[in-house]
Amino acid sequence: MKTQWRGGELLLTGIQFDAQLCLMDSAQSFVWREHKGAYYSVLHDAPIRIKQVEDGVRIYPVNEAEIEDYLIYLDLLRDYEQLALEYAEYPCIVRAVRMLPGLRVLNQPTWETLLCFILSANNNVARIRKLTWLLSEHYGALHMLDDLTLRSMPSPEVLAQVPEADLRKLGFGYRAPFLIRTAQMVLGGFDLDALRHMDYEQAHAQLVLLPGVGDKVADCVLLMGCGHASAFPVDVWVDRLMRAWFPLLRDCASRTKLQQAARQLLGEHAGLVQQFLFHCARCSLIPLEE
DNA sequence: AGCCAGGTTTGGC
DNA sequence: GCCAAACATGGC
Image (tube, rainbow, N blue to C red; front, top):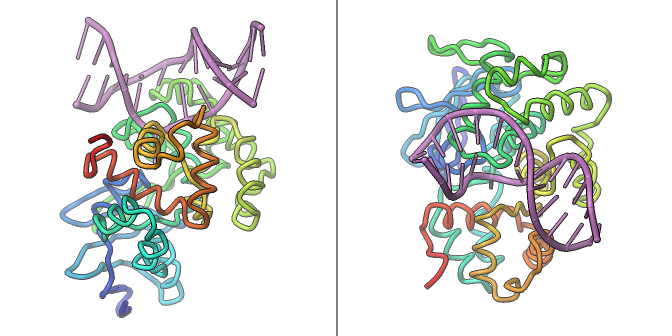
C-alpha cells in the first residue's frame, strides 16, 4: 500500500478495496450515500468523501494527523491474503475470501454502529438505510461538502430527549423506545468505549443489557463497531450457510448453539470470515445446496 | 395480497 | 434453559 497526502486529500493505492461493496452493498454500514460516482458520509463530526480510483481510493478532506484513522476505518492495515491462508483447511472460506478481493470489514464508530444495528433487527436492508437516514435527517448535525448537505447520526444527548411519539410518527415502530432508552443508558454512564478493551464474552454480556440489543445485534456491534474480529453474528443467512457448508454444525439445536460452535471453530478472525460468507450466500455467489 | 426482513422481548413451561 | 407469539413497517 502506498499513501500520499497533499492538499487535504489522502490517496491510497496498491490496495484491494471495493468502495461500492464495502460502503453500500455489504450491509455493514448504512450511513453512506452515493452522489456523482463518490460516497459521502459524516465521520467523527466531519463530512467526508471517498472515491474509487484504479487500484485504491481518494479520501477528502483528511488532516495529516488523521491518516491512520482512515486506514483503520477501512481496515486497510490488515492483510486479507493472510486471512485466506489462515483458513486453508476450509475450501469454502478460501473460495469466499478470494471471490470478494475488495471486501473489508469496516471499523465503524461504536455509537452509530449500535444505532444502525438496533434498527436492523427483523428489518430489510432498504428500510434499515431509510430509517438510518431519517434519524440523521431529523436529529443529526448539519455538514456541507461539495455543495451537498450531510447529516451525522444523532448524539446520545439529543436522542435521549426525543419523545417516543415523534419517532413513531416517523415510522420507527416498536424500535422507537429501544433507540431512546439505549441513548439514555449511554448518557447515564454505559461506557461504549470500554467495550473495545474488554474480552469478547464480557463485552457481549454488557451490550445485551441495552434495550433492542440481543445476541445477534451485539455481535454486529462488536465486530464492526468495537474491533472484535472474533464476534460472529448469526442471522438467517449465516445460520443456513453454516449448516450447509460445515457438516460439524449441522446438528446444532439452536441458533445460539450454532453461534457458539461456529465462533469456537473459526477462532480469532471468525467475524471477518463471516462477512465474506454472508455476502456470498446473500447474493447467491455460492449456492447453499447442490 | 401476502411474505419477509442481517431479531428482540416477553411470558409460558 | 428452551419455545412461541407479539411486535410496526414497508419493500418486493
